[in-house]
Length: 296
Image: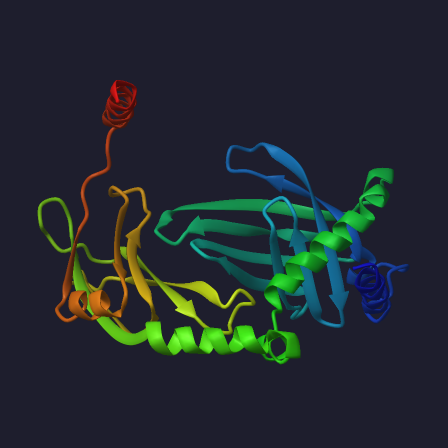
């Protein structure tokens, strides 16, 4: 761990020195710890830490407070990029000046794009003693986050000590997983088709895409004008259909095992979405549940 950290420090500072000159202005001046002054919709401002790395036109902005790295190429000193995190969607657009960055980013849940949040921001170099104090913390957190993004399965599974595990995973994949298609329709409480609603499909898969050998792959599809959806070439040992939006009550249905998957996906599936519970109904539900648990 110590050697890898020292190596990362060397690479990181080499990365910095290979970018713009950071002593005479220009985007390269912003290398390292910076502070983001973020303006929310209600007009309130918040200060957050951000780590800026630049090499040539390649730029990364690491925002620890939301655990996201925005990465992309500068074009005429403008960065436009996106970062999807499971159900979360994030888009950033900003312009680099000699000593600051100005722009905005938007965040929303894939199920509820109508509730998109937009934040204006300004990023400045942080030369405070506190930034110096947290320098190593920034580097370590950034290293961990970039490691998550850059997993190399070929290199990982080529290691001799992982060959037995690799063989077991291959056997489980062949025995338990299956490729299949799915189609269906989404209807509302009045049994009317719901166009444009997003449905999630989660497949549990044995494979080498992750070091654990067993992982979940999520896909999100929107229904067409008739409320219908189709997904082809799905693969896994189980399937979960789910809806986590706010317009309707949350929904989830699980199909476990290749036999059940084939049986349930043979014909189009009908997903019934119900209206969300009111606050009073939600409170009544939990009160009833608590009462039942006490009586047992």
